[in-house]
Image (cartoon, rainbow, N blue to C red; front, side):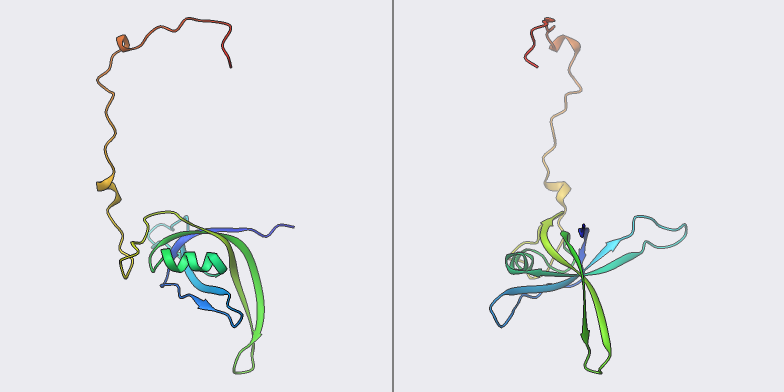
Length: 148
């Protein structure tokens, strides 16, 4: 049987690190994932998914991601039931994260909130080779004894 979920989206709010009574780190957060299609004349829609991360993964998320951060989550879909304070039975479906990854700009650890940076202005331009000519290349001898 197979139970894998891979999502990429933006955090809806800052994740908060909590600790269980046995000392295990845990965080829960929600991400917004844009749908891949847009109906003509309509705005793009998004789906919202609840994510739970444990131990080192939870600490990594809280240390490196904040509201608006782009994140990739690889995990398993899990459902659980509980009884609410009003006595009604509730079902929760969430992704239990096995791995999380950076997918875009990284949040500055010194910054208190997420602020996207203009990443294109900091990328050095590649040299242009459009001025070359055919004379810049040597003729390769044709050998049948090539090593590949």
